[in-house]
Amino acid sequence: MPDTGAPAGPQREGTARWPAFLVHGVLATAVLACLGTAAVQVFGGDTSSGPVGSFVPVQPSASAQPGKTPKASSLPVRGSDDLGRVCEGWFYPDSPRYSGRGPHRIAIGVRGQEPFYRVKAAVDVPHTVKRAVREAWMPDDATEAELVACVTLARTGAQVTTCGKAALKRGVYVLALHEVATGRRLLRREVNGDVLRCPNVIPLGAGDTIPTTVSDGFLYSVLDRYVTRKLTVSRR
Image (cartoon, helix red, strand yellow):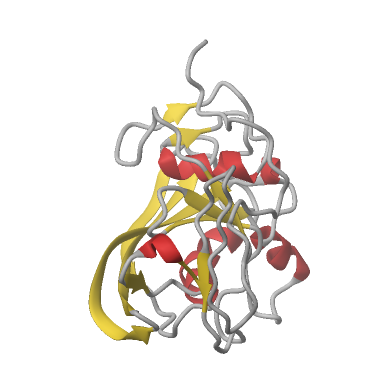
């Protein structure tokens, strides 16, 4: 059977395969003998000003990789995990084309220190936007997504502060925007992680360096014009 880049199994929208999280402000280690899941460290801190989107982890596929010619999947998009694979070089020809009047539905895949992309289940957008635009940033049906924005950690820079025993350093990311149906890249640029405070949850296996992350507000400011623009023709 040909490698299609399809997910290994179904995954419920909006869930996350993260290890169990500990109570706010408490450090502990959870050892799961059967699953071998890594524990996490939790720091207290203000959560009101940072990204609010939850994530769906996507395990990396072995064949298509970023930077190479996009590879078509023989299967349609079935869920958010499939959209994450657009960041790995796959595209889904049966998906809606990026064309016509906006708003155009978008998904965000993020890869930091972990070896996979996490697809945000929601993005915090300004409360003043119209309902249709808000819903485009929070697609409840992955099959309707026209765009996937990939936020990939490239390196870390200067230290910002310390978080427990770890150093919080400026994260430098590559932001790329792709059409789901063709894999066509619409945008690629380097951006800095602008969330400069310690995260509340830190994987214990992350090491002694934590990268700053990119806020929902910044992503909205860069990508909104692609979501709301009107396109007269579909490019091929």
